Amino acid sequence: MPQRPDTLKNPGQELRIFRVRALLAVLVVVILTGLLTGRLAYLQIVQHDLYSTRSEKNRVRVEPLPPNRGLIYDRNGVLLAENRPTYNLTLVRERVDSLEETLALLVELLDLPQDDIEAFNVRSRQRQRPFQPALLMSDLSEDQIARLAVNRHRLPGVEVEAQLLRYYPDAEVMAHALGYVGRINAEELKTLDTGRYAGTHFIGKTGVERFYEEELHGQAGLRKVETNARGRVLRELGRTDPVPGKNLTLTLDKSMQALAYELMDGRRGSIVAIAPATGEILAMVSTPGFDSNQFVTGIDVASYRGLQEDLDLPLFNRAIRGHYPPGSTIKPFLALAGLIEGAITPNSTINDPGFYQLPNDSRRYRNWLRWGHGRVDMERSIAVSNNTYYYSLAHDLGIDKLHEQMSNFGFGQRVAHDVQGESAALMPSRDWKRARFNQPWYPGETLSVGIGQGYWQVTPLQLASATAALANQGRWVKPRIAMEIGGEPLARDLPDTLPDIQLDNEAWWDRVFSGMEKVLTGHEGTARRTGVGLEYRMGGKSGTAQVFSLGQDQRYNAAELEERLRDHALFMAFAPLEDPQIAVSVIVENAGGGSTHAAHLARAMTDAWLLDNEAPDIDEIKEELEADTAGVEGN
Image (cartoon, rainbow, N blue to C red; front, side, top):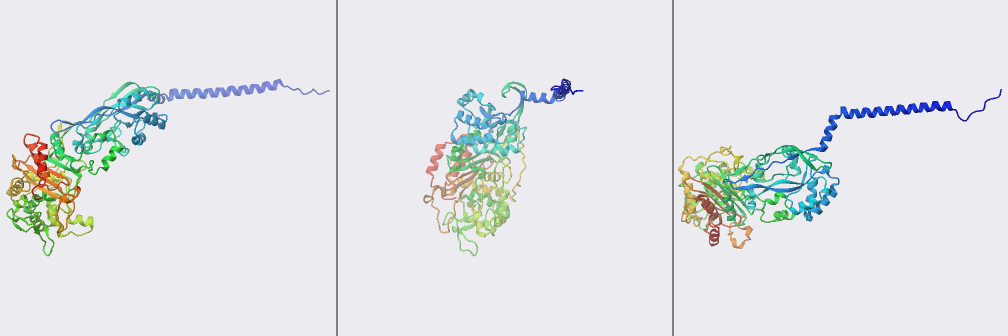
């Protein structure tokens, strides 16, 4: 039987293959459809809340609302620090497409000087919390705002926001006492409460602004806003208002502060005035000053470099950080130490030949009056500022008792309750010298301390505080600069660190005060020209602080020295004697004897406070200073 030929096609087999493949395709489609349907169901049903929230976040945003900073007033309600409306430029890095391109465009639009471009770029990269605006520039001009508004579509993530900016009406006069606020830096950002400081770009940097930062700042609020796809705010959905900072009333008197600044007339130095009974600081001036408003918005590089390189150091707060030998201003304190320790009585006398010699020592420690004052008792030693008397007293007391007694008046310690950055200066001792130089204490160094020279250093605030304690007849009251916070008076009974100073005989205070009064009214008083025409009883003491030491046979001649090598002039005073209302310390650098320049300024301050706050004639005081340049010999 013949075989059938092979066929090229097998329709049955092809049909079977097709059916299998079609079935597999349908199965795959069904599986994929099931998976897709399951995923959609999972996203829409199971994950509904999560993605609904995410979607809402793309449309709704929570923005912080910074609080208004508390205002600062003087004791009479005069505004010292206010908040003025301004416009700030901010940037949210997470919303910027290209940071480099955006910054380049901003620099072009704002027309920034070359020195400010680097600082501008640094601020844009400063560490910031996610989606929080970084402050690029403050106090925009109208022209800058207009340029940014026209180019708004090219600047995603960049906003111009209205905010209140700190402003100081009397910036130079109040700069060192008030301090200033400035931009929050990266280091500060690490330690700040993120909730409380949300949206805040400024923080207290120095002075009162820094010490009372917590009270002045307040608590940030927030608002919920609806935005479009580009992040622009469409409407506000809700808000929690911020809690503004508390207003602060200071003990400072603006008129006294302004008077002290004007009296210094641009010279380097400081004036501090305190109310002895309460410790309230009435004036605290350091000159030269500076415009603290420049630091609020961010001082430009050229201006800051100029302040740093200025030989007069305007940024340095001499009132609380300046270290000066107290000179003869400490002689009343040493007289009291001698009385307390029994080394002298008010009637103790010495014969002054114009110098003092230690036993078995040929060196002569000279009085400022080279031929001496003859017979000198305690009162006269203060009035004529006799050095020999205090060389002898210091030697009898020794450095250990001197250190103990002077420390009781606050020397060598931080004395104020709320003055930020105060220095303790230096009250030397044996232990201090051993630790500092690894050397013993020498008797001659005790004599130098006895006339306020050598290692002894004080600040103007410290000297004013000690003078106030003296005026209180030894009752210690801690100085303070704040009077009320949020309308609530501060407690007057502040914790003190020093004990009251006790004398066995209360009448001895009167004897010391009598010597201080004779400084101004006695016929030998070193500041008797300043005391002419006094309408109240005033006690004071002049001082002269050497800038460099003289050899044994050298004589001081100011005319032959450069101005910055001349002696510093000091004066401390309180008045009226029977009921002290004001204590003052004055230090004028390189002005010569304290009985002239510094004494006149102290008298002007007490006149202004005691004579119905009548401001003295500044021109008349300047004329007196010029006519009295030679002064009365003495220190």
